[in-house]
Length: 329
Ligand code: PPS
Image (tube, rainbow, N blue to C red):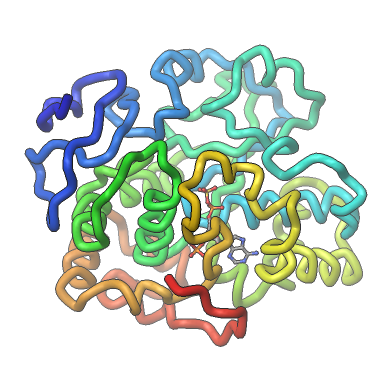
């Protein structure tokens, strides 16, 4: 059943309707979602789970890797694993998904059973996130943010790859959905601003900085997590969290999710580049996204994250010189 835009006030599953070449507010959602408190999520996330999250008892040494989907979550998980093992992640049998389970998807009892210090992955906007409300339960958040145009492209391939979205549309429609915040976890702009303006202990890391200056960024992550860091550990972490290494590492390349993907789908470790949006966005789509970026976020945030106000052109986010092999997408 296709439900018209009234889904924003619903909680529960909304079946996707047929895709078109564009999407406008008021149109039914062309992908299958679970709506939790008005925010569309992947169907793996249950409304009941979202409801219980605010009551979760966080501990002072809990850390949440919080990201809008496709912003570099798995990359950060691998960096954390490298730091925890002083540069030898291969000595740990668990995948990054097992080490830092997806908080919104897991069961409460499994979260309760984890040994401290616990590190979770979370895709919740701040208002829906787990947070301690007493001084001794205040935990920390490691927020990874990536420029919205590259996120949009990466998320498009994610939707095409995982059958659970039942998404059959093409990029122009998906771009409309993204700009209007009608994709998984809602509006990128609201999500990022929610974490930027909250008063919790948050370390903000940009995907672009991590790509350009890993030797500067990785020690900040180690310091935030209270983990040992020296030049050797940083060097090993850079090597073992590189795109090419992770792509062939079954414990960090997400191939354990392959049974949820269409045969022949573009791999989860797709390109790992900065600026790939330039090969996907038209000038008109780019300008439209820039306008929403400008309207829905603060210049202060944009400058804090990217060094200058990139809302106009995202010129600060140039294509990089990464020589990783090109995939067809
Ligand atoms: S998810 O599904 O939300 O957890 O996805 P997420 O891990 O946040 O983002 C996936 C994108 O991150 C890229 N990626 C990397 N880029 C650079 N270096 C490394 N090591 C790396 N690992 C993952 C991955 O390729 C996805 O981006 P795209 O642009 O699609 O390639």
